[in-house]
Image 1 (cartoon, rainbow, N blue to C red):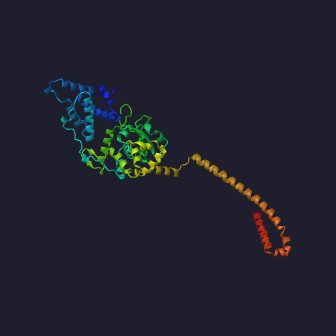
Image 2: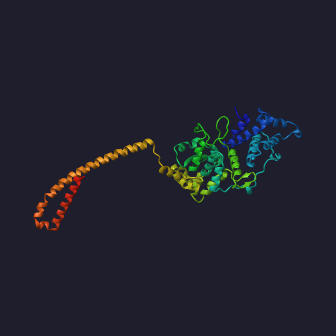
Image 3: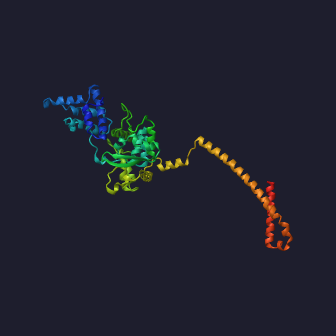
Amino acid sequence: MSEFSNEIDEYLTLKSKTTRRNYASAYRTFLKYYKTKHGEDKGFSHFLDRIFDELKKPRREQSKIAEMELSKFIDTQLPKKSNNTIRLYIAAIQNFLKYKGVTVATGFIGNMPPPTAKKSNRKHEWKIDDIKEFVKTASTYRDKAIIICMFQSGLAVNEICNLDYGDVRKELEEEVLPLCLKLVREKTSVEFKTFFGRDAVKYLRLYLATRKCLTPNSPLFAKMRAKGGEEHITTSIIQETFNSIAEKVSFIEKNGGYNAARPHSLRAAFNSRLTGKIDEILREFWMGHALNGVKSAYLNMPTDELRKLYMTAEEYLKIEKTSRDEMEEKSSHVKLTPEVEEKIKTFSSKMEKEMKLAFNSDIDELKEQLKSATELIYSFEPVLSTFSAVADTKEGQELILKIKEAKAKQEWAEAE
């Protein structure tokens, strides 16, 4: 059974994947309001019937059914939502009604929040310490992972929402760092690659450990309480999460209903922190921007080569450690299993015994050789001594000295 009416389902099929998710979130929230007010069996079909029935009346008797309902919807269901979210939800309903031939005049929705003035529309200029504090303040591993994944990859919020577990599974399970993402940007249909650094992977693992039965098609980031199975998180949920965190930290400037620390600001932070630090075209490639001609060569560069380049850039995106730090620590702290340690101990003991046997054998053999040589040389001593002419020469004295040394060595060997 459809969550919405057939008319809503039909309309959503005409929208992009990201818009479908955002609009579905708006329709779900509106239905909650509408059913509470008009009955659990009432929904969008009932809403449309009321509007069309009203339009059949003489003009002077007609009421603004849609505008009145949307105004009450804002007051009762959206009091804590940001201006952007409220305007998004109203636009979703307004566009559906337009699709059905009904024009909604937002000028008659008196509590419709105005768009934020451009001068306060600026993004927060993130410092590393700010991001650390923002991550620390986030209440769940999911939200912590989203923050760092966006910052270290440069992905837009809708791209984060669209990720499946299959996009990261292979390298995540093989413990590859940094982790490569091979994607196609929905907005421009551009192929690109980017990476999750060590910190992003750490918090992603912590988050995924809280979920069960992941498949390649499972959403990488899911809604907390989804009916009928897991669903991809939506941009509006991430917006609201960031708003909630921003209210708890002191370094975010409050601009009325506008959040300077909105998700897109992390993509901007990725861009600004790498500007002037790495090749400009490479930075653009990682962000999924369209590249023409020779600039697109990065797409065909081997992933491991791109990985090495990212490891250099990761120094400027580090929250706790870089991928290089992690790998060096692992290589210097190799932990042996008890079985391997026992084999090494047995092998060492065996080698020690064999070396002692070989050494003792060599000593015995040398003793015998030394004894024979000494006896041979010693037999010449009386002969040499009888020839004073030889014994008194320098060469004769040296030979006699060597004979005496040989005798001394023989005595030492016999003592051993």
